[in-house]
Image 1: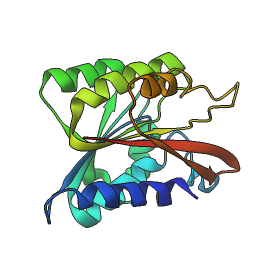
Image 2: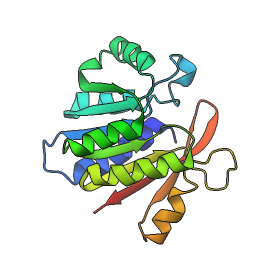
Image 3: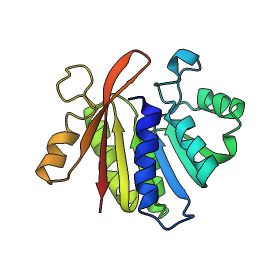
Image 4: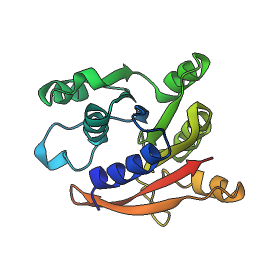
Length: 185
């Protein structure tokens, strides 16, 4: 399953938990890094999938990354710029600022660096930013991989807290990976 299909399914689920006509507020860490057709099915192009959803259904996307230049160019070309706020900088700093400002989101995708501790820290803040019930997704979770480590600290923590999640295998750009999803009540 491609990332865009996985996101569409999960957004439909969370949209179904909201009143009719509700406009989702979506947050993601990690955005578009490569502007080629070969990268369209992976490499941060979730920003375009989210922007397309809010363009169609209403809402807004906030995307945080250390470098947003490529994302800005792609969103301009796709005519989706009005639906996305790009925040350039370190994800933990931005997440903490949004938490301090009292912002909340319906769906959050954590897709920043392949760093197990960073993803765990992002998750800890993200769950406080989440409007309940709310959806948290984490891309590139491959429990058995020695190289793809995003879920290596998060999965044991989720298990210890008895938080239910599923991991959907995703393909795209020649890469096999997994997308973790959990809906927090």
